[in-house]
Each structure stands twice: as C-alpha cells, then as structure tokens.
Length: 178
Image 1 (spheres, rainbow, N blue to C red):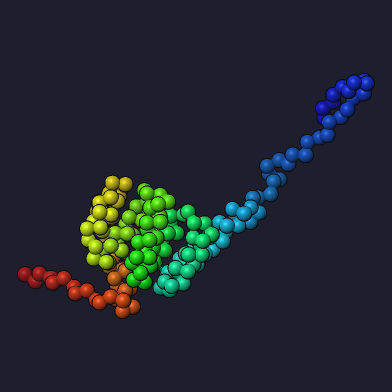
Image 2: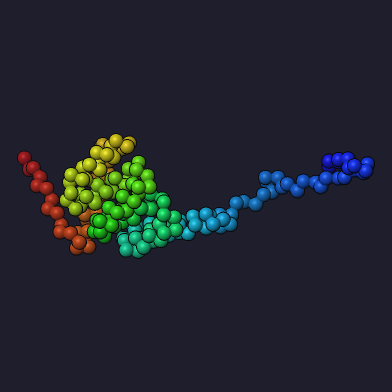
C-alpha cells in the first residue's frame, strides 16, 4: 500500500493493484477479435478447399478458396492454390488471373510465376512460359528443382485434364530401342 499526505494532514490510502500474474491470465481467444474471427473463417474455407482438391472435386475447391479470398483478399497462397486448381479444370485464363493477383500482392512469390508458367505451357505459349521460368530463377529457385517440379506438375495436370476429357491425350515420346 502507498500512502500520500493530503493538505489537511490526513493520509489517503491508494488502492491495491488488481494485476493478475501471467499464470492466471486466460489464454487468448482468437474469436474475441474481428481479425481472429476472420482468420478462423478464412482457415475453415481454405482447408475445405484443400480437402475438396485432394478428393478431386475441383469445382468445390475453387468455391472454398474463393470464399477464403473474399474474407482475407491479400494472402498470396490462396490465389496461387486457387490458380493451380483452375488449371485442373482447364480454366487457364482464370488461373493466370489468380497468379497475377498473387504477383501484385508480392512479386517475389515463386509459386505464382511457376503456376503461370504451367498455364502458359498448357496454352502453348512457350515464350511466356519460359520467361516465367527464367524469372523464377532470379528470385531464388534452383533450376533443376524447378524443372523437375514443373514437369511433375504439368504431367499431373495433363492426366487429370485427359481423364476429364478436357484435352486430348498426348502421344508418348518414341523410345530408342537400340
């Protein structure tokens, strides 16, 4: 307790502090703030999109990722993953739009350039695809790692599109039998 003199000679007593020690403070509640609520709703939709994409339900995945983007519109990963999902639907321009939105948010996101590369490659726009590939190398990607990843991803997307009847199956390259 702290005492202090008051003009007429009487002493006043200051109230005791009501501070709770850290061990007694309640855990933060993310639902208690608007940002916490938004993060929770965003995450719910984003994860639902991931689940739908994993199950091959690309239309539902796009809807869920779109809902997440509508809640928090400045997260590059949501745009890049929705863009990739559009590729599995054969919606190349929508994919490019999403990859470019991610680039506008953060122009150092390699996955946005890699995704746009895939869209351009699927469209047959090799020069644009190569420009994105080369630019990805300048912002931190290893050439061999990027090349292997893009070949794998392109093969996966093409097989889904072929199975859905959205593109014609590609002829396999002839093998040397010497």
